[in-house]
Image (cartoon, rainbow, N blue to C red):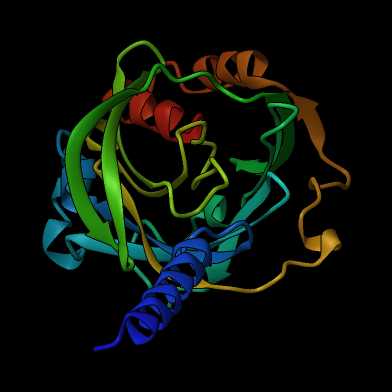
Length: 246
């Protein structure tokens, strides 16, 4: 091989390497998440529900989309579940919408609680994430594991990729060095994992905060409302409060 040919091949290879390296960093798109709940674990200790355990499937899956661009994200229901589960089919929380502005560190959430719809406006919750060296593959991305804690005692396990440059994630979880593609909350018997990424350009109107006729509140006041409303619900009430504040 001549010197000129070798140099030519070297620069062609270097060019393709640079193109590929640039192509893997993503700044906008849509991610589908599967939310999976262990219903049998959720009803443990609730004797009236445990009597119907054989009629309830162990797991329930619901699907959500996360749109992201310009450090803004919107998390909302992707599609209706075809599965109708006794005692769990009328879950209006699947219609909640969460908007996050990662630059301003604020979020807005349209949230259904009982028969009322709230508009929750607050600063994004701070999570003291501890990043580990553990990794796993999610939706084709190598993700790194981080562990955090919310609501004083609820541990959250997250998996994020720095190949997506927006530091967002499902629900209201964010502020890791990349996009969160997986969440596990053992206390809530729930996981949220990305199933696919679509490289689309979300329209500006998609990345806006929810509006409409709703009761305005913030995290602190919503927690007080919940505690007052279901103070006598026992362990199920505590689980409901935690899930409502995720």
